[in-house]
Length: 291
Image (tube, rainbow, N blue to C red; front, side, top):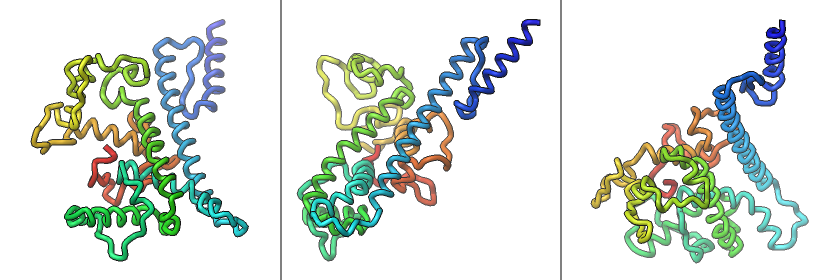
C-alpha cells in the first residue's frame, strides 16, 4: 500500500520541477545516482545556454541604444562622440577577431584617401604606401557610415585600442571554459588557473615543447598541423581542421554548440552579430585572425 504513495510523490516532484528547468525532467528522491548525474549535466548545459543568451541580449540592447537618434541638446563635443561608444565597441569586437588583430593606433584616426587601394587586391602589398591605403580602405568599409565622421578623432582610436584587448580577453575566457572539450583533455587543465599545465605531456606535445624548464614556444606549433606533424614548408598550416572547427564553433555559435546541434532560434550568436556566414554558410577564412 505504501509503494503507490511513493510513486505518486515522485510524479508530483517531476511535474513541479519541469516548469523551472525548461524541458528537462527532474528525477524524484528515489532516483539512482546515474539518473541524477545525467540530469545535472543537462542542467549545466541548459544554464550555459541561458547565460549566453543573456549576454547576447545585452549586446543587442547596447546596439539598439547606440543607434537611437542623438539628443539635440548635447552641446559638449565629448558627449557628441560618446553616444557612439556602444556601437563602436561592438564593431571593434568583430574587427579585432576577424580582420585586424594588431592595428596601428597612428592609422586609426587618419583621413580616408580619395582613391584608396582596395584591401582585397594583391597590389595592397606592393609598397608601404599601398599597405597603409588598403588598411584605411578596409577600416572604413568595416565601420558603418554613421561613424565615419568621428573616425578621424583621437576619441575613436583610443576607444578602439581599448576595446580590442578587452574583446580578445572575453573570447579567450569563453574558450578556456570549454578547452577540455576542444582538445579532448580533462577540463581541469584549463579551468583551474593554478594548474601546472607546463608539465602536462599532452599540452607539451600540442605546443612542441619538450621541457618545462626551458619553455621556447614556436611561431607555428604542432597543434596547427594535421596529426600534430610540423611541416617546415607551411603547406599544411591550419590543416588540423577538426580541432580548429571546434574553436570556431564555440566562438561563433557559443560554447553550448559543442554539446548540441546549432539552431537558428534563440538570441543572436557572434556568427549572426558579425555576419560571419554568407549564403553558403561557410566561414570567410580569408584571414587566420579568428583562428
